[in-house]
Length: 474
Image (cartoon, rainbow, N blue to C red; front, top):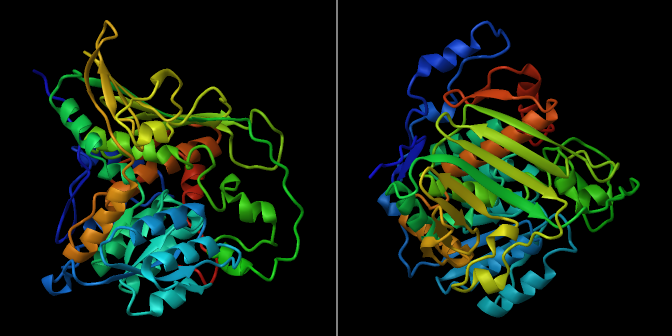
């Protein structure tokens, strides 16, 4: 029986994060950069850093109360913090933090019912970071705040649960890893499929060699649409929002309700509504199932605004192709397929499987012997042979509760969590690379996994650099 060979970028241990070389021939990457005076051939600092030791005296028993706060009290943030409050794991939610006073009221009331005391509402996350009683934070802000909020929290001695994409640029993700390592903090990324049991059994099945050699992996996020959009006029910011703090590290611009409420349609605040919306869940899960193969050698992404001529500067459809040397991985994301459906509760919370042909968020793994479909957020996996017969399968359930419990457990044990910062970074890098290829003119970009840099396009490299606004620097 043949076994699939995988590349590993990193491993994790209870004492901190450790890195292994991501390239078998380091000279090949260095050679590809020769003659480019604009590109420094530097291995990212986090790969050279020594993780901070985590003292056993910092462990907590199950009887010790864990005090947490929510930063970003939108719909998803409230859903996550309610799961944490309902765990029955001696978790106390002390703060709801949001720059918008109109958000979070429902969540505050519900958490108050659970724990008998309402969380305190604050606008500025730094108030939370200054409170020494707070052990950890859940960050569910718009994407452009994920990196800086995580680093501020780590520097303040807080453990962090941060939503995806965890970073806004490749370099910001590297800084997040380095900060987590230097401070010895636990960082759980909101890629909750890493806490699903069925993802691990799918990984074991592939490692057994039953699929044969993996030749292609196709990942979908094909949602209903097209979605119309009319950008509103700039106005004075309402008194209920601290607009300057909402913008944070992003460029200073006048208040606009479209930017405020539809921020995923602007590069300043997100990695695109299509590519950085939900597809990173499938992408991260596919990487886990493939035993975390590290970073690709190149990317080519095409797409555009095919349906509406409006002011959205992100595409409504994209397809990206990544070269891993011995297999190809594709991402296909868009808002134009009303006949495709995400798995609903009847799949996520049952032993049933999706109807794969029109499942909007499926993962397809093609081997030389058989093929596998994998569902994200529940849905399990099934393997088909050449006659279309199901030869192996396992059902699976929505793993959000398990993922949050894993974070709380790791806050106590100081073990690294399932969705550790390095793998969260690696998955985010693929999203960033796809967008950089698109934004630089649908160009193929060559990438060095060792140096984590684009080697053939200065424009794309310039777009990949983080420029935080004064007062919100790292």
